[in-house]
Amino acid sequence: MNNILNEIGIENYIFLSILLFCIGVFGVLYRRNAIIVFMSIEIMLNAVNLLFVAFSTYHQDAKGQVFVFFSMAVAAAEVAVGLALLVSVFRNIGSVDISNLKNLKG
Amino acid sequence: MAPILIIFYVLAAITLSTAFLTIYSRNPIHSAIYLVICMVSIMGHYLLFNAQFLALVQLIVYSGAIMVLFLFTIMLMNLNNEDEVHKPRITRLGAITVLVLLSTILIVLFKNSKPFFGDYAPIDGDFQSIKKLGAVLLDDKNGFMVPFEFASVLLLVAMIGAVLLSKKEKTGK
Image 1 (tube, each protein chain N blue to C red):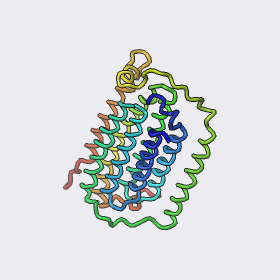
Image 2 (image 1 turned 120 degrees about the vertical axis):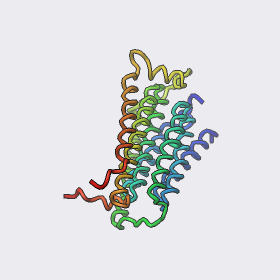
Image 3 (image 1 turned 30 degrees about the vertical axis):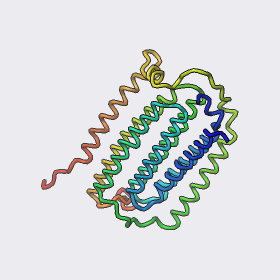
Image 4 (image 1 turned 60 degrees about the vertical axis):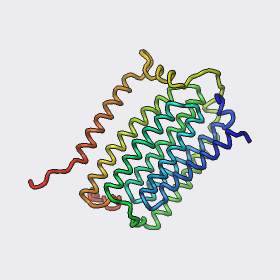
C-alpha cells in the first residue's frame, strides 16, 4: 500500500482534482440558491485538499497533511459564519436567492 | 488492471458524479445528501493514500459537523420546496462554457508539468501515521504550535460571530 502512486499515478489525481474544482466553479456560476453556492465552495476546497494530500504522499512529507488540517479548520469556521450570514439574510429579505441581493449595487 | 486502480476509478466516478448531482438537483436537501456522499468518497481517497488522520477528520468535520450545519440551515429556512427559478439562459450557457474552458485549460496545463515536480521515489517507512503527524504538528522547534493556537482562536471567533450574527435583533426601538 505504500507505493500507491506507482499503481495509480499522480496524473490521475491531478485530473480528478481539476475536474472536481471545475464542477465547484460551475456550481458557483450556475445556481442562484446561496446554500448551493456554499456547497460548491466546499467542493472546491475539498478538491484542493485532495491534491495537497496526493502531493504529500508523492513527496513523502507530512507537512502537506498538516496544511490540509489547518485548511479544514478554516473551512469549518467559514461555513459557520457563512451560514449565520445566510440565516440573517433570509430573515431580512425572505429568500436566499443571490439575484435578490443587489442592494449594494451603485 | 490492478485492483487498486479499479477502486480508484470507482471512487473517482462516485466523487465526480455526486459533486455534479449536488449542483444539479433542485431540492437543497438532496443536494446536501449528495454532498455527504461526495465527502465520504473523498475520505475513501484519503484512505487509499493511507492518510488515516485526515480520513478521520474528513469524516468527522465535513460529513459530520458541516453537513449537519447545512441540513439544519436548510430546514430552518424551509427551503425544501423546489420553486427555485433558473438563471437566465445566457448566464447558464456562460457557466457551461466556463466549465469546459477551465477544465480543458487546467488539464492541458498540468499534463506537461511532470518535469517540474520531479519523480516519485517511494521510501519504505512510515511518514503519515497519526503518531508521526502529531510529532510534525506539535514539534518544539519546527512544529506548527503557533498556527495551531491561532486556529483555536479562529474557531472561537467564528463561534462568537455566528452566534452574534444569527441572534434575533431587538425590535420595538
